[in-house]
Amino acid sequence: MRRLLMHSPIAVAFLWIVAYLLLTLLPLFVLLLYPVPSGRGFWTEFSVALGFIGLAMMALQFVLTARINRIESSYGLDILLQFHRYTSLVAFFMVLVHPVILFIAQPETLQLLNFFEAPSRARMAMLATLAFLAMVITTIWRKQLKIPYEPWRASHTILAVLAVGLGFGHAIGVGNYMGLFWKVVLWSGIMLVSLWLIIYVRLIKPLLMTKKPYVVEEVMSQRGDVWTLALRPLGHDGFKFQPGQFAWLTLNINPLSMREHPFSMSSSGDRADRLEFGIKAIGDFTSQIKDVQPGTRAYLDGPYGVFTTERYWDSAGFVLIAGGVGITPIFSILLTASERNDGRPFLLIYAASSWEDITYREELETLKEALDLSIVYVLRKAHDGWEGETGYIDKAVLERHIPRHRGSRHYFVCAAPVIMRAVELALFELEVPVTNVNMEHFDLA
Amino acid sequence: MRYSIMVQLVAGVTVILVGTAALFAWIQTRTEPVEMKGDKVSIHSHDKD
Image (cartoon, rainbow over all chains, first blue to last red; front, side):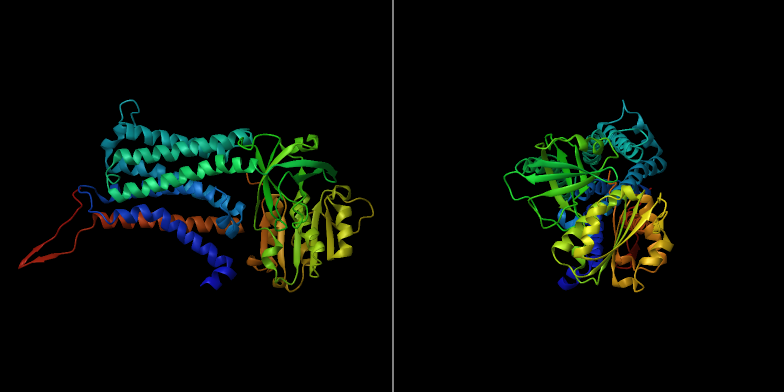
């Protein structure tokens, strides 16, 4: 069993899902230990069950987003956040359906919608639902509503605490089931763990980060409107990382403020004394990177991520597919491999807008001397005389270059979402095993 | 692809959760098994609606 868990990421992932289901359903299982309340029909009980499941799912969101390394290392943060988004919508659906069933099964409960005359337990339910609704709307349509990242993140945390806290208050207030001893113990435990996680992630962890500050050593311009931010640990050893991983970066301000952003390291994973990040100027925060002065204080939370060749030490070689600034973690993979004298073949397929925009172009050419590295550049706007690939990385380009024995390599893809989807589909059509494809989504927000 | 797997996974999780909610409601409101008391037979139900 232990051997299976160590060697099969799928088995580990499956076990986490079973654990998730058991935790979500535990409050219902506990109820079965008690005598059944009288006078309630199937639909009322069904509605109550959905309410409890919805509340448990909401509380578990705090676990999913707490950046717990053990869970994160089974999936990767992007996958966990995607699971968080989807299960939040399911929880929202249950929270909405829960009263609707009651209104239909017991029409007299419709009176509870009168906010001013309703008992406090019903008011708490309404406020919790409104907080949840606000959270869903501001998250799905954040960009359309032009809400900047940091205020959104702060409001997301506050609304989440409100929604779960008021939902818990509502369940206690209704009291039919919550009067039961073990039920109260269980839910109080769930609430305390959720509260602890939010305090830990937003308060204690940032305070610990202040003990290990970094200082900006250099800001260098790269091709393709990318800036390399080099950090040096201040009074501590820094950290080594698996090449391809990322960290959350906070610059020049108190780490308690929510202005942290995830960036991939572009330096060697074995160099703890100097960490470099490749950052493209595309957003509010990233556009300011070029103006950061050497000497500026920085804080890091990391490393995170499973987008790393280190997990596949026995792979015969690697196919790395990058688009634009997606080269950052891949450059770290190649740099680290060259320093470790890795003799395995690496194929890099790299899409950029033009020859001049190929980030790390010179450095990549140098790496060819130290590594068994082949590079295929794919240019969107090719200059006269260019004889290489042009356009986008599509099925035809991949078919021309990836090895005939598809399963002999592990594939790493990091690019803009639209390119990632196209490449993923093309690899699937070219019969690359799904388990050999690793993807890094850098749009986590 | 991976996200369509994710959609399928979350859909599967949802079906299990809703199914368990329905099973829970059924268990809580089901008619209890027939009880034999001497030569009398009685059926109890929690569902008084």
